[in-house]
Image (cartoon, rainbow, N blue to C red; front, side, top):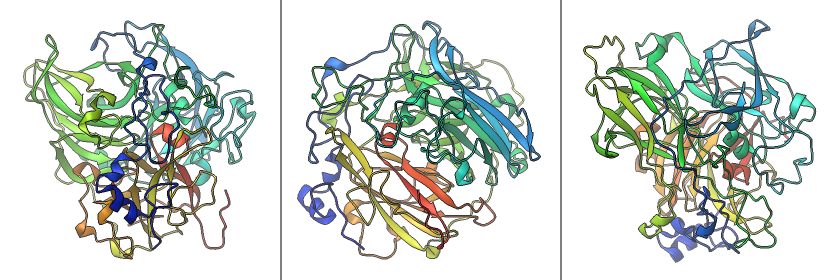
Length: 613
């Protein structure tokens, strides 16, 4: 194997870097600390040796209006119906358009962008093995709702075009590449202008994969963070007869929960930072300028700020999506005294029944917190039968940024501990025929001894032309990191099995997402323990995946100072998923990182196809 670079721009090998910095060195690399629920931006004159703990000016801090918590009930996204058929399959038309919506009782209506004018968008429900067509229609205004940094991918994006660029990605979809929602397959209103990878107006989703909680969201190059923050996201639930036969909570007892963080202005409008304040600005810094990350100061669930949910004392199924730009959640349920605002002892545990890619083989009780990284889904059952008449807080103890930070930097964190309340009705016996069976489905294990290739993929830092922090994805060919438009370096062949080893040399956790495939998490090890001269991974020597990482995943948390190993099969596997070839993406799912420049293409092509992009 090649010698692995530990710090971009230094020419120091991974081994020499670790020897020079000690075991904690990888945790203090350049990264992102800007208080980006303020109009914060990267520190001045960053260098490759700058730590992630550099403080920002507090003069730029933004605080949302004070809102009384727990006054609005959690709404449930509607389910959209097809408008007809195409080639014998259901055909949907979904318009992206501007609308106003009451996010909180005491806020003026907020202007949002929504699929069918709803934030979050309506749920599409499909059946396994039954394809659907969707035409995503752009009816958005000419000007963007939020500040646009025109320096991001400026050589590839026509920022002077009329109309907002959009393209919808079905996240978790095992789909043809022409319907994947590539970031360069964007289009403006009425398809007047299209990106270089735009190929068709009607997307085809074959739905030949396990039933799962998928989601759809905008993926337009350079403005994904803005379009999703404006509201362009919704759920796509794939079902099958087997899952429906299990007796899980269903109907009104199955509730989707889209968790996001947002900030607001006094007039109810969405607040999103436009860059650093004038006092902190270098003359060369663009305005607006992309920020390294964004954390809002208000919890929003299904489009409502700090809501509450009324339930009966029985079992419920929650399909949880982390739809935030950058925030991680680590969730548990606590007893809550609303009068004092104080939390008490633990409430009921989460019973995890499914992940990104569908049901687990058997349920897992989560006692120590349910981690839900950006872009991930968690399918859980909660039994409220022993909590009649009580109020519970959905509590989040994840740090923001989500990383290993020394205690002295506690003032730089932007936590969001209170997510929503749950009120359990005080009623008598409730008829609850639902169950959580001990066996849910069969999840075949991808054998490590069938691996065709292991790829070392360092996550690194650099700076852009304006001196701003730049997160990059490296490879064995260039461990210091590639830009989006560098030639493809990840090129599995159809039916190959590969291990992708994400070596995080930055100081923040990154939720790494692969399009097209679902993978299984093999485990983690410290960077200094990773043997870069070995031709194989000793799975038994790895820290095993967390209970909530079992089964099929399409996002995995790569922690600082660690190598996170996942195994993927590119094509049909044991009767699951389907064969697809073409050009896809892999990237960090922190949307600010994805836009700037932590995203790369990969190809799945026969040997005879060069796969140009």
